[in-house]
Amino acid sequence: MINIFYSYSHNDEIMRNELEKHLSILKRKHIIDSWHDRRIDAGSEVSPSISAALKKADIILLLVSADFLSSDYCYEIEMKEAMAKHERGESTVIPIILRPCDWHDAPFGKLLALPRDGKPVSMYSNLDEAFLEITNGIKSTIKSRSTSIEKTERKEEIPTIGVPGHRSTNLTITKTFTDLEKDKFLRESFIFIANFFRGSLEELETKNPEISFLLDKIDSQTFTATIYRDGNKTCECMIYIGSLLSPNSINYSYQISLSKNMLNESLNVISNGHMLLLKALGMSTFRPAGDGEMSQGGAAEFYWHLLIAPLQRR
Image (cartoon, rainbow, N blue to C red; front, side, top):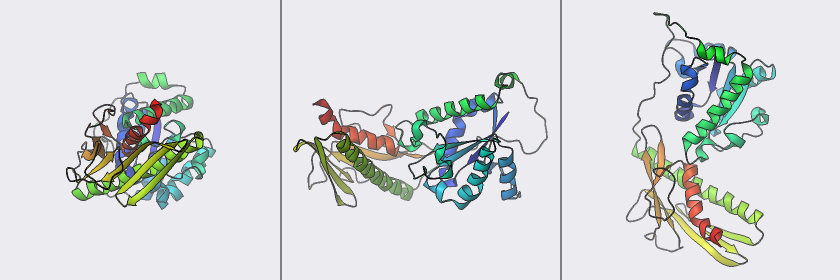
């Protein structure tokens, strides 16, 4: 059985739980046994428990985010020991990029990260797609580390009754989010979309000499974007928080206007019981995949499509 160790920041616990769900088939087949610090029993010493689990780990998953990089324990202790084991050939370290951050210059930046090409999980419009890519990558690593996977799959383990320390890792319960958490997520999403637009516009201009753009921050809750082709305006938009009809939303208008009551699409904060997401009202002709529930990355991609669509039709 392959022992998997999760190194992560508690701020990313929801994503760790989602990844663990996607690895559940490997666990049911007794191919893997996973460990993270939530499995430490009450009364046990934390550091020795983590060190013991890290010592016997075959695969170490670094769940990378800005919170992970800023955590002294994750970065200075767990990550450094993980890389030492990796370099000695005792374990395989796999960076899992959860959210955009400056991870390439870290000691693990030389390693092949998941999802594919190191694209952050949060930038997928469908999070299940990201976690499936990660799962397949982990399965490939398992096969390369073990020549007896098929025997392990067929093996039936006889449970021992009364031995402490064995418990389910399926301990996630539905969560109720406060108004403050929802409002903070709305504003963080607006900032994410604004940064996404800047990066996309700069790349569009770099790859297409005939393209130029203007990106203006009107205030802390409003920005506009205009794309020009050969100096002629091709498309524009205004993205802003709030309106008379929908005060707690991120709205999109095809026209730049002083009024915040003109909108062609709107994103509202919703909860799926485990994490906060954004959902489109479906006012635009272009509809997001599925039921319209999106991560911040998916929402930014959705609004970017609304802006660039006229340019692509030419």
